[in-house]
Image (cartoon, rainbow, N blue to C red; front, side):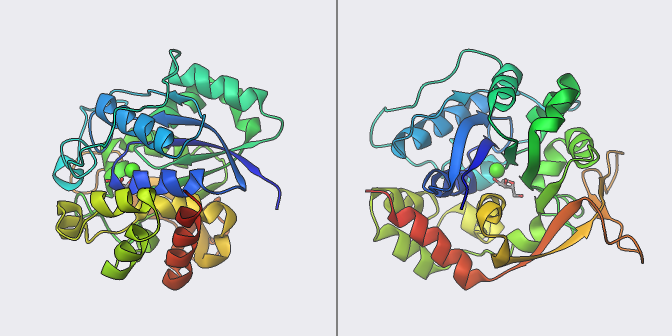
Amino acid sequence: MEKEIVVIDCDPGIDDAYALLYALADKNLDVRLVSTVSGNVNVDVNTKNAQRIVKMANKNIPIVKGATRPLVKAAHYAEHVHGKNGMNNYIYKNDEMAELLEISVLKAYYQVISKAEKPVIIAAIGPLTNIAKLLLTYPDIKNKIKYLTIMGGGLKGGNTTIAAEFNFYADPEAAKIVLESGLPIIMAGLDVTEKTIVSQKLLEDLKALNPIGEFLYDILDPKSSYMQIDKGSLHDVVALMAINNLDIFSFENLDVYVETNEGLTRGMSVADRRMNSKNGKVKVLVDVDIKRFNQELINKIKSYK
Ligand code: BDR
Ligand code: CA
């Protein structure tokens, strides 16, 4: 399998931590940049989490801090789900952090993507603020993007409001720009991600593997609010796993639109499912083989010492 070049935009975030540690263990993913964005918690807080996680994985990957707020409205956080520090109030065992780049997120993206020897996959698992700004600021970059794989939206309804999923609700204007960019997209929305509910067995299996597995257990222990409120789905992992394991999922090819108007449906994702409209640009994941999903996660986490 040829290695894919990937950049990851995230807001860690419990399931972001799972997704990062999963992706960084995949030898077929060449992760060239990790960026952060205002999302689950304030971007200063989630950037520190990203730095700690990359260090834990013992990887030398540049990290860059991204948008401090959404494009239009004030920031909307999910501290009640992820804890004040974004990690279920986990206390880190040491102060080790990977280094932070001193340049802007857009420059970092432009440099990494334009210098890459082949088109790059952008994996976006937080609000889409950075990615929307990138596409607006450097439209030529589109030629070097193979596709985007995003955790966001859901055709079945929301988890933050009746209609909207958290990442799309947090920055609907950005989600609209990205979804309507014409770029090929894999959309790991709630239709599939809510099917990746964490079992007690999965948690115990992870814990038994190694210190990284213990960390993953601790940030998502069965008593955490994440498990209560969100029923503990591993949303963000889906977007990363789909890159090299699309056969674990089933999908529909649809065009997806995002509502930005005020009211009940702000941030809602809507797909055209009328007759003759099923050849859209977005691969909307709708189902998962949960046994294979869990096994694939375990296999990757097992590779840490
Ligand atoms: C998404 O929202 C965040 O809370 C999670 O990290 C995930 O990216 C799920 O709706
Ligand atoms: Ca996230």
